[in-house]
Length: 316
Image 1 (tube, one colour):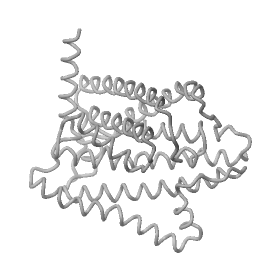
Image 2: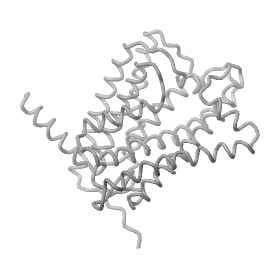
Image 3: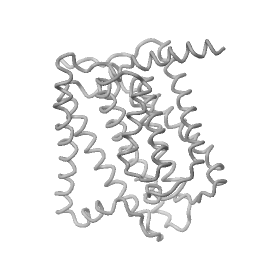
Image 4: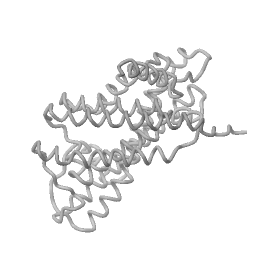
């Protein structure tokens, strides 16, 4: 049994290392292109941020809202309206940055967009849906554990303290905004960063660790437990991207995770606040990663058995 597990693990590692998400983007001077991409990528991130600042100078209240994005809102019956506006602003900013970052990568390596998202095939809606359903189910399972650990449960969409129509507005805004934000983060980290990292190494576990650490670091959360939580989540989504050869599952899972927290747990500005977290919360996080890895492996093996997906035809 131990031998069969060892063989299966080695086979899985080999498949992950050979993922289309780490295939060489260009055989022509790849390291020179990488060196050129670094300053271009920095400019691609700064450009939309500068544009938003300039726009904020002409749109009343926009600059103040952008400056206060990381702050928790005061609780009042109309709080969810401002929560919605702030989250939409954040999503637009993230979307613009990810598009600019992706465009910079495409120009540098002269590759189509799909090469950084789901190389060699079309978008797979089924993978996206499975990611949503799986993470939603996992989040529901962890509610009793979190409450037992002393967590406060105050679902904003069910709380009568907030005005009725604002809860509907909040639910709609969170759904759209968090989908954009999750997709943007996945495009940046599990798309462009992962593909570029493939120039350095194709070792799956190293790529997962590198990507998870970068993903967690960008959130600037000083709490070590929260940092590890995000690192583990980033590693899980990186593994998913490697094994299924695309971002669909990771986007769906990431989106469902954030949406569940914002709708069913507490208002968005509370969820995003940096806070000290007990080390015990790493237990469900590790269990979540184990479930995600198992489901992703089943999906990957089924896809491998079904044969290759149709390739997107190249433009004439």
